[in-house]
Length: 540
Image (cartoon, rainbow, N blue to C red; front, side):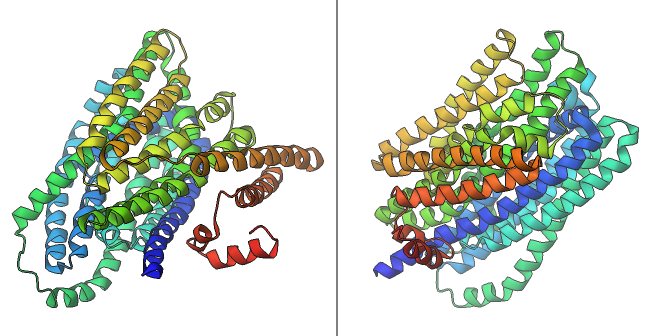
């Protein structure tokens, strides 16, 4: 029985690792294709691209972003009870819902692209609508793909989602750069539109891949359905109602949680215009923020968010079966795993901000470097708040993250407005606002977990030890970079040496300080190899 529990506990680590590995590749590919694209379309073009993408992401949040989580919750709940017929009906009903909602928002975005751009950013940014219109079909594609990804996530099988994300990003990278290069001659707005064409084509390729995976799996599902002895079977309209009911709080919490992006963009463009900044100067600053700072920050955030995705079906299944003690054990291990990734990522970005920025982008000023150094701590706060939202959703406390997000968003808006309007902090106001927002979410979510299940966050092993190991890592990475660069004067070589020595120092420091136990390491992919290495060097 103990081995079975350990296997189940390890499963979430393995599935998280699969998604995390995919997210690393996806974000790295995204980073490297944005480098040539940024050089092709420039900071002004990146400003148009970032503005269009903020609108697109907001509409996606309202329409399709909650679909994978909602489907995963419903599928996990009924798979735990072996109701395979209802699982299939949930899949079909969710697909009908996705086609309807995806089709409606696609038509709306196609028809209202310019109106949305003018309403949010002002008449001088009407050309943002060009890129937004090209993004519009991606909304329908993403809704359909979300159902398929949610289906496999509900089965606690993350490989189809992971591989489809990588396929999507490869096509996105190639087409974005090529289309931006072909269209930049017509102006920065058209260059940005070329970049969004890659997003659309990438999503289509990801849908085709995961559709093939589902087609290959379907005969197995049909055999399970034939053995299903359950008596209560849902009708299509019941399934659609369940999807809407389950999806609504997920969408609300996610939308409110991330709506700060579109609000920040709108406030920034409008207030900065009123402070006598030129349109190009505003677009360039936002290009630094969205095309450089956020691109790098999204790499560690993508890794930690994958942990939350893998957590939801596991917690949902345990809660559905009344096994709350095991659910709390999973929560402990996942929060620990999140910090083990997020804290060193934060320190590494602070220490290597300048060389990383200079390696990847054409840096015309020190704004992107300062943004990354100031905003790196949000890797910790956003990661923690994202995972705690997933925990509350898995516990079926769907309204709680919504309420917490509303409170945090209200604080965020006030802080950002004051910092831009009265402190003239321009783009840095958005970084400070994001930090305030994510910290408020952390505090509110922790209070909610204590209120509902008596959960108290362990601090020493979850925060103090990873922080101590990260500080050691940061010092070693900094001095290795300086030393190697002094000798060879080649930035990329100095960064590679500093990263390798830094990661090794972090791993060794974490084990020696007691931040990782042998049992926890055995739960990692290739955990037995890690344990053998640690024993060989007398670290365990």
